[in-house]
Image 1 (spheres, rainbow, N blue to C red):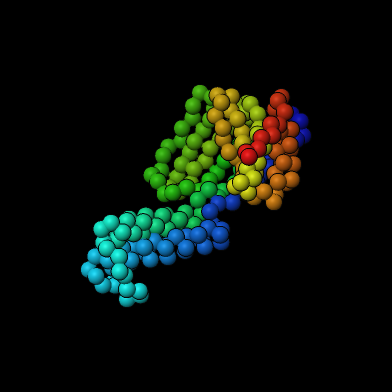
Image 2: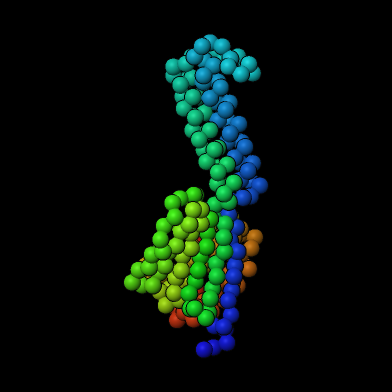
Length: 202
């Protein structure tokens, strides 16, 4: 066995626990409460939270504002939960000795499911708020380095033999050179016969 396959590469993956997401969450909640307050205040002709009096009619303007406010509150609470649980955080383990990639990620709390393995050797294990995916090197046909300028993001995607695309790493565009170098390293490590594919979204 080549010496490189005796190595194990561990790469962390960041989740949703970022300050920019927290600011967006706070803004969404504030707007949701404001819309809902204005909409509800138009119904009894009085202000509920005693902030600003409203002169709009409940139908249709007030009703629409209530709808927007409710959506804003639901979205804000959803973002709070994603921030609290740090959805998407975890790590990738590239194990040369076992010849596989292990992807460990945090997710929304679910019921624990037993380990499942299909004919191709792909394994999935899930606990209450985490899941683990295992992909043998032999089922990976190529790696793709994808750049998304509009989203300010670069990522590495593994294409499986059955055509499925599995995102294995994403970073901000400022780390583009590091991610590209990592993609080249992984291509050599997995020993793919096809070259690394570079794609970009305009």
